[in-house]
Amino acid sequence: MIMINYINKLPKAELHLHIEGTLEPELLFTLAERNNIKLKYDSVAQLKLAYQFDCLQDFLDIYYQGASVLITEQDFYDLTYSYLQKCAEQNIRHTEIMFDPQTHTERGVAFETVINGISMACIDAKEKLNVSSLLIMSYLRHLSEDDAFKTLEQSLPFKHLITAVGLDSSEKGNPPSKFKKVFEASIKEGYIPLAHAGEEGPPEYIWEALDVLKIKRIDHGNNCLQDQLLIDEIIKRDMALTVCPLSNTALQVVGDLKNHPLKKMMELGLKVTLNSDDPAYFGGQLNQNFIEVQKALNLTKEDLYELAKNSFQYSLLSDKEKQTNL
Ligand code: ADE
Ligand code: ZN
Image (tube, rainbow, N blue to C red; front, side, top):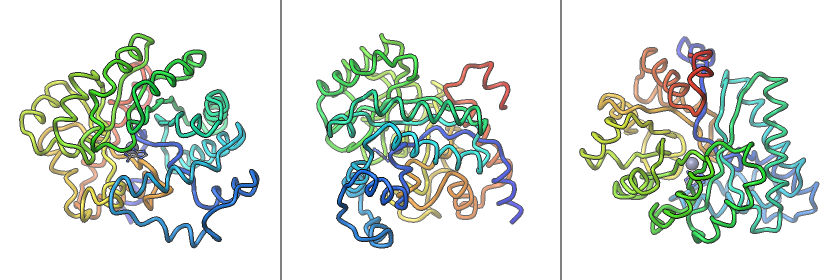
């Protein structure tokens, strides 16, 4: 109980969060009804039964289906504001939100609809909830680099609303080097490069994300532990890993939370942060990730404080903005 109170009160930032992955089953049903979309599932309970995954691809198939109920600007606003309210409840003071434009533009929803709905919710949450946020536009790696270039182009009128680019979706068979040119072009436009790497993919994909895509932070990165030279390099470059424990167990990246490498990463000197990834699908918001991992790995208050401190330290906030939170 003491630890739970400590966690709940700890000011923290969330650095790895897919807005489409915050779509709770209840809201999913509400939006389906609002938009006259027929679902494969008859009830929230039935839908929840489908949330059993053997691997990342299993999850992605359901996640993209779920996102198909998002049609209007109001839908994206409601989705985002609902997540930001949860941030306020958990004392998440700052969040860096990933969104996947291609998941929506592929279905005929305009880029503008997506970004307007999400960013209006972010503006309102700053004012009403005192939660700050910034946006990471993620390219879907199972699609082509040409497709990512189209997305980059579509984003340019909204550049002032987007801080960084990311790379997500099916990792195996889609190495970072596939996106070399579009990351170069994104950097030229002023976007900060980030990428998922080493969630299911090998350490070589993390090397490529570092050296080819020039990323500034590694999403997941678990598999760096298979390569001591890579660990040394990540430490040398002072790069953080955005680790997602409940995602890792839900997607069978890690069999049991008790065997999660988080503590080992910290002991090796890696800079790690805790995150929820897709909380509506993986059984817990950010504080639940803290609570469960604390219990499983016997983390001390000092460990928890370090994780929370890292979350501000390795955020994309300016040094001045970081100071107000640290
Ligand atoms: N998209 C949403 N969640 C993801 C994850 N954990 N890995 C890759 N792509 C994702
Ligand atoms: Zn992710």
